[in-house]
Image 1 (cartoon, rainbow, N blue to C red):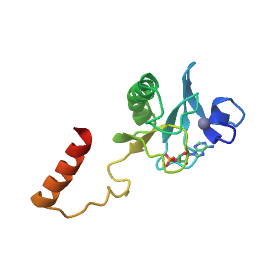
Image 2: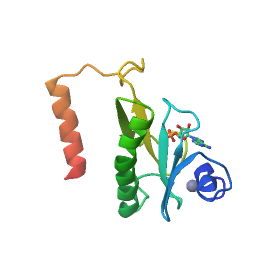
Image 3: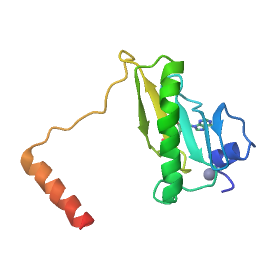
Image 4: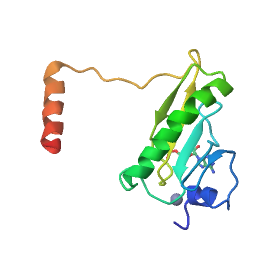
Amino acid sequence: MNNCIFCKIAAKEVPCHMIYEDEEVIAFLDINPVNFGHTLIIPKKHFANIFETPDDLVCKCFLKAKELAPKIIKAVRADYCHINVAGQDVAHFHVHIIPRHNNDGLSNWPTKKTNNKELNKIKEDILKEIN
Ligand code: AMP
Ligand code: ZN
């Protein structure tokens, strides 16, 4: 993909703060970290999102996140981390490792009030799509 910033990072056309690389994936520090140690893991090949990425590469990115996260937590003295896919900004599949500190002042996700009736309806709607 010509204009993809993460393809350029993978091709070493744009610099990054790399912490891991092999033939298929690369991990580097997020340039706008939520907390220090915020890391992104990407396949070197361009896939726009998780749905377009081959299963073996999705697995590889998450397994690499599982391997790297405890080391990052230790390095930045975090208490725990999020491992997630956001995909709001860059359309090249990537997994975030976001170190968290118990008192880092970041709020948790906002929640909605709901009830059994509503949850049952949503469950039924999803089950219709699955089955
Ligand atoms: P999202 O697509 O919502 O997962 O967000 C993309 C993430 O990529 C954001 O956290 C950005 O700070 C990060 N990002 C964008 N450009 C760069 C870059 N050149 N180097 C490192 N991280 C980047
Ligand atoms: Zn790309």
